[in-house]
Every structure is written in C-alpha cells, then in structure tokens.
Image 1 (cartoon, helix red, strand yellow):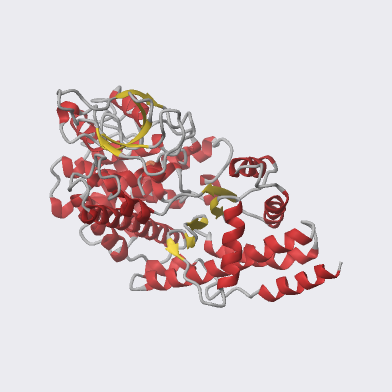
Image 2 (image 1 turned 120 degrees about the horizontal axis):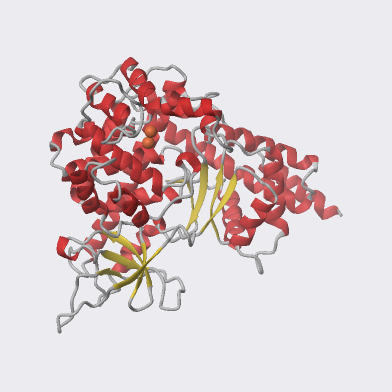
Length: 532
Ligand SMILES: [Fe+2]
Ligand SMILES: [Fe+2]
C-alpha cells in the first residue's frame, strides 16, 4: 500500500489555489469598453490553466480513491469555483487539437513548469480520443466525482467516446459534455496543396498553397470574428441584466469586422452559423441572426455603410429577453401561461430596454424596429398585436426571416428539436408572402442556397458530402459546392475533396451530382465541423 502514499503526495503537490481576481463574472468587464476584452482573455487563459491542473489532479486522485473519498474534495471544490467563474455566461470548453490545449478557441500556452501537468492531461484525453470537455455552471460536486470515476473505470480499449457520453447521460451527470477529436484547421489548409488533381471550391487557383493559406486565414479570421461578436453580446446582455452601463463600441467594432469579412467571403461567414448544433454558447442565436441579416440585407441592396448598424440591431433583437428571469429562460419543462406572456412581451420590452441605454446615437430607430417587429410577421399573424395600422420596416422584415431560419434550424431556441436547413426553407416558403416578405425570402435563399449551407447530401458516387457554399450561378442553384466527408461505404474521410457540382467533363456532362438530401438532424450528424 505504500506506493499509494507516494502517489498521494505527488498529487497534493500539484494542487494550486486558483487565481480568482474577480468575484463577479469576468465578462462584465468587457461591457465597460476599452481594452478590457484583452484583460478578460488573459484572465480566462490563466483560469483555464488552473482548470486543466485541477482536472488532472481529479483524474489522478480518482484512480486511487473512491468518488466519495475526502481526497477528492479539494480538486472538486476548486474546479467548481473555477467553472462557476468561467462558465458564468456560457459553458466553458477545454479542447484538445493535435496535442495542443485550447480554452474555447484560445490556445493555452503553458510555462515549462506547467508542461508536466499539461502533458499528463493531454495523454489522458488522447487515450479516450476526447477532443473537448465542456463544463456548464450547473455542474455540481457529484457530477465531477461521477465523471472522474467513469473516466478512470471505463475501458477506453473497448468503449468509445460515444459510450462514455452515453454513460454520462445514463448516470444523470449534469453540466459535463464530451466532444470528439477533430483536426486542426491549419493542417487542412496546408494539405490542400497535396491534392493537386482534386477540384477545389475556392476558385482561387487549384493548387496554389497561397490560396490555401488565404482560405485558412480567412476561416480563422471569420471564426475569431464570430467569437468576438459572441463575446460582446454575452457581456452586454449580462451588463443589462445587472443594470450596469453599456458600451456598444466593442460590439460595433466586432460587427464591422464581420461585415468586412462577409464582403470577401460570404459563404465562410455564413458557414459559421451552422456551429449552432455544435457549440453550446447561449448567444449563438443572436450572432447567427446578425450574420444572416447582414448577408440578406447586402443582397437586398442595403447601403453598405449601414450594414454594420443593421448587424448591431440584429444582434440585440432579443434584448427584451434580459427582462425575463434566467430560470424561466432555462426552464427545462413546459412554459406556464405566465411564462408565455413574458416571452411574448420580449419584443416590446426590448424597445424599452434599448431606449434606456446610452452609447447608441443614431441607432435606436433601427434597433427598436429589429426588436419590436421581429415576431410580428408580414401579415401581423405574430406578436405583439397592434390596434393601430403599422408598416413593417425593411429591418423588421429582414429580421423576421433571419430569426425564424436560425431559431428553427437550431435546437436551443425554445428547446425544440432542430430541423434540417432544407426542411426549414420549405416550411418558410409555404408562408411566403404571408408571414415572410416574398422578395426578401427569395434573396435569402440566394444567400444560404436552395440546398442550404450545412446540408448533408449523398452524391451519385454514394459518398456523403456537406454543402459549403451555394452555387455561383442561379441556373444551377441545385448544384452547390460540397465537401466530401465519407467514402462510398460511409466511412469518414479526413481531408475530403471539395467539389463544384457545376463542373462538367469533356463530354459536357456533370462530373458529380446530388442524388438525395439527408436529414442531418435525424442522423444526429453535426456538419458544422466541416466549416471551421
Ligand atoms: Fe425573439
Ligand atoms: Fe430571436
């Protein structure tokens, strides 16, 4: 038994007190504008390293002691404090990609002393082929203990990460979710040059590494841009809830960045909206609606200089929800009549909330419209109901389409089961001219495609592919750009080729065609990982 003692000693030595420099939500700081965002990033990374350290201690200790043993108290309590701080606004994810650890999207750079801990946790995650562990602030002591117990008792040799996740659910472990490993995006870009014979979809030279780099860079930029917008909306919502002051500067800058990226490469930016089924960030919906609105407005000829203002208005379309208690919003069960009244009031509450905020100079009109009109529908079949004649603004009509599309394709809003993008478009078309502006709806389809971005399709070759970009030419709208993700037998392929389905061979017939659409939500298949 003596070796247990030795182990115990080494475990205890690795314990470190967390550096908690703020008691409140850290992201609260962002709302003050300035460079607080950078401070936040740095602090989150520091806390991230603490979290890794404690997770390592917890796993190691669980290999020795039972889940109820007092030896687990310290790592568990420390982890809970860290999680409560870090996941205050949205869940926090530790990711492992190609042997690098990330906190969310930020690389956790470690010092030489921290190396041993990090290597140890990377090894432990690699054994399970775990690509990410997400913690939510609802996780409790028993959840961490039970999770760690499973981690060390299940046998990764004959259990998959899926089995592990199922066991987590079966045991009622709350607030902890696992993710599979995925390849680092840079690798994909770098390897594109090797597929010289393959047809690429970016149209910037088939095998120039320069274009691959550019594309990778763009994707990275888009992803960072998305995260920044998400961060701003999170912080601002939090600040409004706490009755604090709000600066829109940061959100504005983040949105302007998105608009610029969208002018370069609309498809990549819109591809980000498919992240909804993957990441659990609460504010994804607002960001997605903003992105989709900008794209639609751009196609509708909205003045370029005003796209960022529209995007900002769209970002805050659900601001009225900040008046609804969080426990109602997160209620697992059915809403009561009262809850519904509160929900139905959010467009009006949003106007009131926004009108009280400072820092929005010429925006309120557009912002008010975005909030007030987004559930109204073109034919006023929605809410709020008005007793006076009303003409919906262009902003409102754009928002209605973008909001509905994202809400229906995402599982998070109102906790419905998500629908596949093409089903949602069909449903929306059945209400064209009624709930939705017919012209705008057509333009919207031009953005996401008849077979929308993110759809899973089967090709003539029996390979499965994901739609990554609508067809350039409307005549061939049913021939988008796709990325192959499985071989004909359905086995996943890592660096699948991208195909422009409008490409023809020497004889003038199409090289590849879609034979059918596959419902990726039915198959619980997450296509978002092929975008970023
Ligand atoms: Fe809403
Ligand atoms: Fe919404």
